[in-house]
Image 1 (cartoon, rainbow, N blue to C red):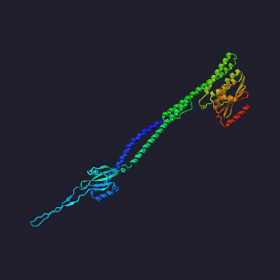
Image 2 (tube, helix red, strand yellow):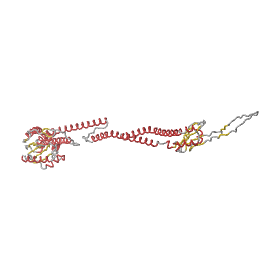
Image 3 (cartoon, rainbow, N blue to C red):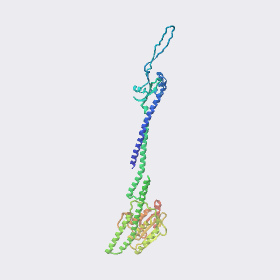
Image 4 (cartoon, rainbow, N blue to C red):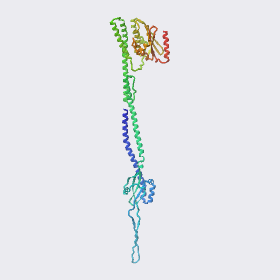
Length: 484
């Protein structure tokens, strides 16, 4: 589109420039020609008064020399002769006395005829000069330029011809400069129009390119891409529509993931109860089939959770929060019923106050259910467990402890939590917990609890958990745990 606009603008501008520059150049040339011949006529008119007064050669030579054209040897005067010789006869009468009469005659004295002569350097053809003596002005071509032949009436009724030489340089004086100026102006107009068309095309093309690039990235799964609104009104409207569509897609995908994750986690709790009940069925084909079916169903649910949690892009989490103590009390009420059935002692501490954490309630519920579900899944019936909450100025620590056999290799368990998997565990529970902690800038650690089993410590940072304050906070919490 950009180069198409440039080509169209170039073609239109060139046509307009030619349409105006060519006629204007011809007019300039004609004006220069007319100016040169008008100056020649003015030079010829300066000799007319002298020719009207006298035809004396000396006087005419002085008049020609005093003119500008005569001084430049560009003027000539062609004076005709009298034709036949004129004679004058003087007659006298005499008177005598007496009877004799006498007549006296005077001899005729011939008057010399005036011969034709030329003054100055003549360049015109004699035939053209004779034609001009008939009273018609003429312009003839001569070597090096033109000759203006201007007839002037004499007192005798004949015509003298004033010849003024006009060189080519006088006829074309200023024409080349004018044409060069016209060419420069035309070229400037062409370059300016091309540059303007290029800028206009760039203003149209860049928003379109951004829109196409964003559409391609959105098609590749980059849901965070957005288009900057700019350019013409139509492209701005297209950018607004694209951004609105992208936001709607993100919202729909987020709602879909949340729904899948919520449904999957809701299934995990009854599945845990079902698995424990299946384990108490004893031996037999029916019991084995039931346990196998429960295991298969649990794997399917884990797969749903994993699919819901996987994201092609790391998105910024919304600034949501909840009361951690209220969520922990609610989930402990839920798990206490199952703990009572299995003879487990459940402890709860530090949940009396209101503790706000920058985690959405459904995510915190999913993390607590994952940790408590691991306790019920990987420890024998009757094993005690406890949940403690510790709060400092900029962090909240949730400790889930049990009195079970513990974890022989905590690092391997955390690696499984990162999705590596491992025997006997899918690692999804710790993966959920890790994601929740890291969303606040915190982390997850596994160690030995005061009950003798495993302790999962979840660090929920309230300020991003960066810098020296975080390290000092960790040291304080470790000292508090030692005292506990």
